[in-house]
Image (cartoon, rainbow, N blue to C red):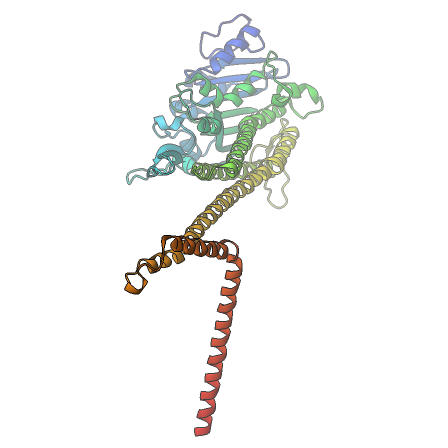
Length: 538
């Protein structure tokens, strides 16, 4: 029950306090963002809400034996790091009849936390060295490359190992008293303060964690979140818990949000007086808003927009690159990594859409001649029952979410991949054009050198003639004769090379064509004569 003292400090764990009290609300927001907070329980309805933190197993057992108050029919149990609270997990699994496999997976231990887990998703710092080129003054470069997991002969396949290797690894479990979905969720973290590279800062940081959402037949919603490991920055922990904190704050009358971030759970209970049951309505809407973590999705899309625009600017800058400067060789690795992340998230969003389809599918499989029955609270039971069904308002929201995923997110990722491929093609076309221009310049330089060599060839021959030691020619030619001859030969050579070079090329090509035609005609004539001679002999 909620404590009657509205100024309760919430210093005692496992005791409910009035969540609509301003002091309790502010203290709850602070405690929910602390790493030491392991769980919390909220019971709410149209007129009130109460909250308690850090329940122990015996407290959860007592809580499950009783029913929520009639004025607060919806219960939300949120657990962080479920592997550290296996006693509570076992109690919940036993009470709601989780399958042994599901219970074992939820309670399994995640891999040991390592320092590199706080780095960008699926990446590690690696070096690619290129030999320094003293001609263009380039040095070795560093590029982020994908972090391919190392396989160990002694490592076992576990749930978290599969979730890390396959971003679209998801689960959908249905029981007589529960519906459970599990998936990876992407969390955007702020760039490291020690990161000096503006390109890495612009790419941001992401952390992928697995979560389960369970809705039960007694209007209880259970959310379980993978342990993120050691988080040094409190802002990163707040970013990881952002959606949970947002939903939690708006369960109180003191919670505020902008129109885009508004998550109407308690408010919706007042908007529809004709709803079947407030408990069903509240639990279904809570389940939906915990699933729809739109912040990570749309922030990721915005990040892709920004990175593509930056890479487009860098590629177009290559057009104005000077001939003596080397190309930006970091563009292609960055495009490759960006395309890899886009494809991974595309698979993730396709998995979300599949989960939505599974959540919305009919929850009753009847045998022939049997009819389904419904409890007063709106949950389906009876022969062949598959458990929990959502309220109509939540089902409609899931349908709209599926449409948004298809029309906005998945179509946008396809556009991103097409634009990435177009940028790669543009980059190579620009560099190919630059190479063609450089080759043309080199060809012109080689042609100029060849012409200069041909220009001085007649003069060299003339000089050799004047230097021949022949007695009859000794004393015949003077220095003036030499320079006159030099001027005449140089002028004629210059005229033919630089003014009649195209004419000479035309004459040369014409002569080549005549020679080829004459050779072909001669070969044809000889073949004809030999064939005729062979026929006469036969």
